[in-house]
Amino acid sequence: METRERKIGLVIHGGAGTIAPSKMTPEIERDLRSGLQRSLEAGSGILKNGGSSLDAVAAAVRVMEDDPRFNAGRGAVFTSAGTNEMDAAIMDGKTLKAGSAGALTHVRNPITLARAVMDRSPHVMFVGEGAEAFARQTGIELVDEKYFYTEERWNALQHLQKAEADARATGKEFAVSDQDRHGTIGAVALDQAGNLAAATSTGGNTNKRPGRLGDTPIIGAGTYANNRTCAMSGTGDGEYFMRLVAGHEISALMEHRGLPLAQAAQTVLDQITELGGAAGLIAIDRNGNVALPFNTTGMYRGYVDAKGNAVVGIYK
Amino acid sequence: METRERKIGLVIHGGAGTIAPSKMTPEIERDLRSGLQRSLEAGSGILKNGGSSLDAVAAAVRVMEDDPRFNAGRGAVFTSAGTNEMDAAIMDGKTLKAGSAGALTHVRNPITLARAVMDRSPHVMFVGEGAEAFARQTGIELVDEKYFYTEERWNALQHLQKAEADARATGKEFAVSDQDRHGTIGAVALDQAGNLAAATSTGGNTNKRPGRLGDTPIIGAGTYANNRTCAMSGTGDGEYFMRLVAGHEISALMEHRGLPLAQAAQTVLDQITELGGAAGLIAIDRNGNVALPFNTTGMYRGYVDAKGNAVVGIYK
Image (cartoon, rainbow over all chains, first blue to last red):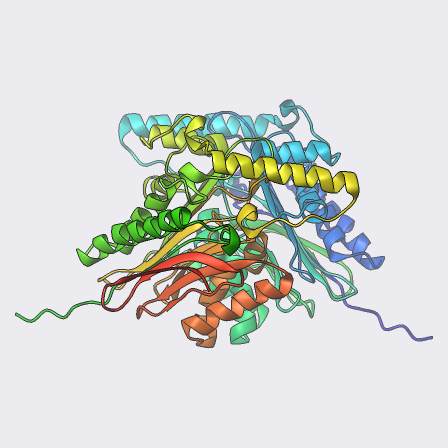
């Protein structure tokens, strides 16, 4: 019996806004590349075994959530109040079902909660204490807030708050590095059944005000999947993704204008650039074409190529 | 000197999911029509005097937020925990700037806070306690939770929770009226300068879980404005608006497919209907064309016609 091998595809990002090349050390770079590699392996292992794109993107994201080098889950950045507030979303391109959770403070894997919102509630989105109550009821792992403490992120908050105070005192502008500003992780996948899915997870921006939500948990902004077009996950200055409804606009350009994936993705990134946003995104279409555009110095990223090989990158 | 009068336009809704015709009393109907009328007057007064569409939609929405007959602000429905949680959003079609606030418990006029998020922060969205902290810092009026207590909404919660408990005990399905399920208010406007704006505000669904956000505060789902296309505000089963990114899809059908407003709005409402959603929406384009489609028994609604007359409606 002849079996036709179905195409699969997986793209991940660990955030646009990388460590400045001058500050990169061999140790940090090894950690980052290893984290991306393990995320790709977790997702592609599922896809190669005939698993769903939904399971693949959730697994790929969970690996990065558990890795303190990435700004999501364990390595989430600190808010201006010295707390950690995390957001995540997942979307199924086949059914257009979606799940999202925002302003989480105790959920070990925000993407797991987003998935539960999609699968086990009639709703799309929960935030704050209500979201964590739902997590408790559905058996999602909650952890002490200390779990999210990492020295590197804490120092970044101190650094940023000092720079801000100095700027206020002197009246001078201060520059914030991309690395300090943001970071988000995400994955998009195509499975053997031809279904697309997208997942995104983030700790937001260092020194953000408590309660601020960016594009990550907003379906159509930083997370979107639709079998008719593409799956996408964004990273960077979330407000621009929200105002442009960026994820859905990429899909609309493909569906209504007939643009190919790469052109649709670049068109929307260019709109973000014009508005002044620093950003990147990953996307995949139903034929397995991928796009990974960004306008920052670098974007932690990776994909599995047509031969099944994992490719990871950091700078341009 | 000849002055060419510029076209203005205003459309409002007070929610799809009206009181069943059999339960309507002359008193309630008079209150509702009067509330819609006063909302139209507040918004159109601003537009006629050359004010901005942003100011007009905010004013129109505030009137309904202060009116206990509508499910937003004062008349917000109760959550399953017996609390009130409100969401609102506003968007400027000229700049694509937007402001949104969710899961509010003490903000008298959620739309005023949404506007402050847009105008006075670099962010688009705040939720929960962080949103209320921002409200406090910007001088937005906070009120005691008792302000949101209305006997009618409290009784609706008791009725719904009893019906749910009975259904669990007997294993039978139970029907929830549109009126008990949802309700949202909103306004869209075109001003003399040709700028579009949209605003939406809601208490969500009776008996909703705390922390659940619907489409109202999601830019592109239940609230969207873009001078190139239209301004829209949705009402009904919010999850379908979120999954379809309904507001932005109406805009995309106009921009990328060249559909006229009414056809774009009806196309997206039909998609919501196909997925099983009960819903309605209002929309206006830059030429002042309006659309007010709904698939429920009724939708509290109103608009100002070409001659400046206010027209209000409840049932089909």
